[in-house]
Amino acid sequence: MDYTIQKKVDDDFDSVVEKTMSALEDEGFGVLCDIDVQATFAEKLDEEFRQYRILGACNPQLAFEGLAEEIELGALLPCNVIVYETDDGVTVSAVDPKQLVGITDNPELDSISEEVADRFERVLNEL
Image (cartoon, rainbow, N blue to C red; front, side, top):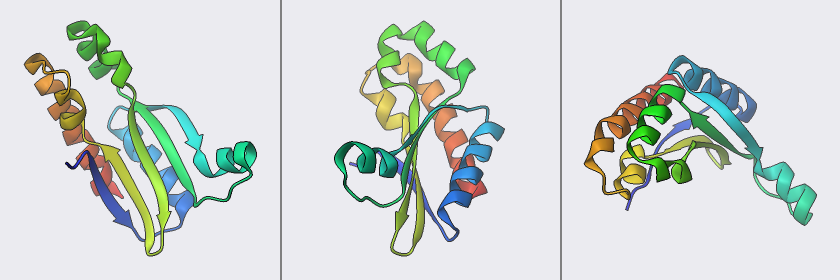
């Protein structure tokens, strides 16, 4: 099962993170958390890991609408977007909102998940 939408980008890691955050902002998402997995593993585990960032993205209006319909939806928020190094560049991957929201089995959320999916596609297309 595919649960992400992704794009490979031929650019340096930090630039891709910046561009991703900017594209998210252009689509109405704020980044509520930015987890540097590489730094966390180095500090907490004394382990080396590739550059890997988890960006917790939230569009307040869409989150409000979703939570008004399904209060437990908050357990699935924010939507994560990851940026990580690969041997041939950098990959940006976003959770597929249709898959994520699909587990709620609430058709009232379909239009919201489609809107988020459309916005995430535009974010990836900007990179």
